[in-house]
Length: 231
Ligand SMILES: *Cc1c(COP(=O)(O)O)cnc(C)c1O
Image: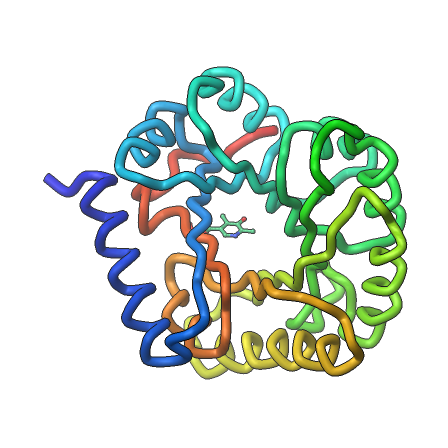
């Protein structure tokens, strides 16, 4: 039987070989995406050594967090953010990957508790040029990054993208390349960043080859998700 622990070891080995083939000095972090998975699956991966988990839906995440308070988990919020949810997100997560407009950044900054370290954030970039996808357009990125750098309770760490799903690996690679170019352009402008959040179960080796420093993996670790998650 294939367990979460076996799959975790396989994923870590795949990450390691993609990483060493690309840039051996660059660490790559795994965020285990546990949306639609029960708290017991998170606990099982934790026991296998995984510490960082990503959730998309606030209500679902809060329920699981309440069942896992005995574990030292680093929680990442990776889902779309409605402005009326910014307060609990800023209180219950260490990282937010999906900041895509100034208003959301300001609200997260205002409600981040003073007692906690700054909220670690990535800006979500739209690399597929589809109106329906969330994310800031590459042309608007530097201005948003500069505004976020002014917010004392946020720490801008890098960029995130969810490329349009495609079977065409070349199109996927082109989207990763585009995010990488956005990231390099910000570094060239003097922004201090260390996180390129891209790559999911079906494409993370390709994302690492394009410079990902953080991959977000759900189904390859936990198995297929049960019916649609709510939150
Ligand atoms: C669901 C999700 C993932 C993980 O997707 P898998 O294909 O299951 O690995 C990663 N990132 C985001 C933003 C997601 O919503």
